[in-house]
Image 1 (cartoon, rainbow, N blue to C red):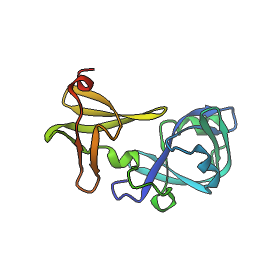
Image 2 (cartoon, rainbow, N blue to C red):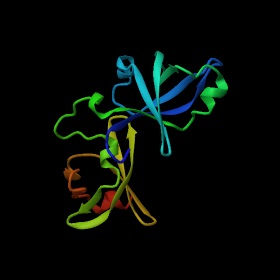
Image 3 (cartoon, one colour):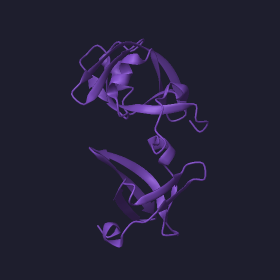
Length: 170
């Protein structure tokens, strides 16, 4: 996915039932958007394969999908852990100050001009996302709020931040 033609919208967590239904963790703000899709690309390592969606439904906080060619529990179990992707042109339009999680991964965070580390994870914890910033063995978990992250420049791979020491010490 280095060429940015696909975007991750989910991850296969497990199976549901015995007929090959996949349980997907949605990595999108609107899990209902799975209903609009005809197909998805599953990625594991460097392997990509496109599957036609034959049925979709929401179940609790997950999405359940039937994909063409996956008809048994064993078929579905072989898919666990794979990323569910769509072509970037099908991605939703974002507001000016919104970003796809994959765009944030690896960005360098400069706290008051000093390199703090790189974004290594984005946890979606309800109302406010939490960025994990790693610098060697040290990790910082900081709420993704505009008061801390002043400027996010994806094209330059850089985030300008002003994070109070009290937050970093947590």
